[in-house]
Amino acid sequence: VLLEALGVPYEVKTIDFASGQNRTPEFLAINPLGKLPTLVHDGAVITEQVAITIYLADRFPAAGLAPAVDHPSRGPYLRWLAFYAACFEPALMDHAFQRAPLDPATSPYRDYDTVIETLVAQLGRGDYLLGDSLTAADLLWGTGLRWTTEFGIVPKLPVIMAYMERVAAHPAVVRAAELEFGPGMTVISGETGAGKSLLVDALGFLSGLRADSGMVRHGAERAELNAEFDLS
Image (cartoon, rainbow, N blue to C red; front, side, top):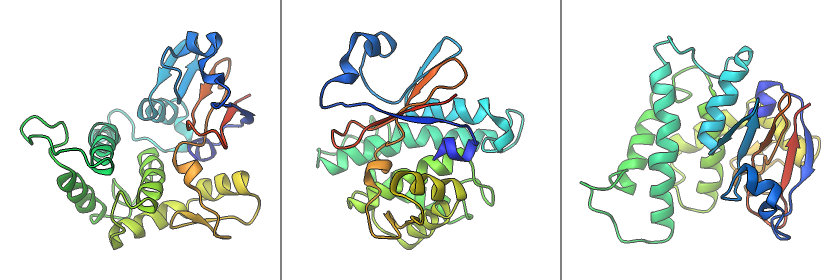
């Protein structure tokens, strides 16, 4: 989705986790954890979804998906990207696996309810996380909320569902759905217009790309469908 929004050309290749392609010496030399996403660009290795989101949105500023460093909204933009990885994802995993609540005084995200309440409060302030303008942070959150609401990990509250629909209407999200499932497909509350689930994409289907002379791998550990994108 982010690549479509950036307007960067890319080519799809397959990565088969079931056969251990992510554990080959070649891949482990790039990312010893054998996980995705992994970006190699201009000789630098960048891992973690949020870091790659920040990097690509800044690397291709013409798309206007990231506030400039000196813009007043830059801080809130970084806050919500960091909140996704540092609070939202850990809270969801603990909640999904029904782990015993942590002491709020020592928990990095306090508690699951507070994380959801904080997110809902922010979404209620405007069409997108930063108000009227969609950023790369919204593409990340829109995708994450799509699969977490579908799995019942996040409640399908009206403000969350309305936000998801606005993000899903973005041309880049529509194009990504068409590329994955064919022309005429659109994302509607976590499904394509034909009713086919987009959970594979939501779990991180975008799995790799080559930007200039480097390679980006951005994807999900899913045996049924894994892909690698090359940017040329």
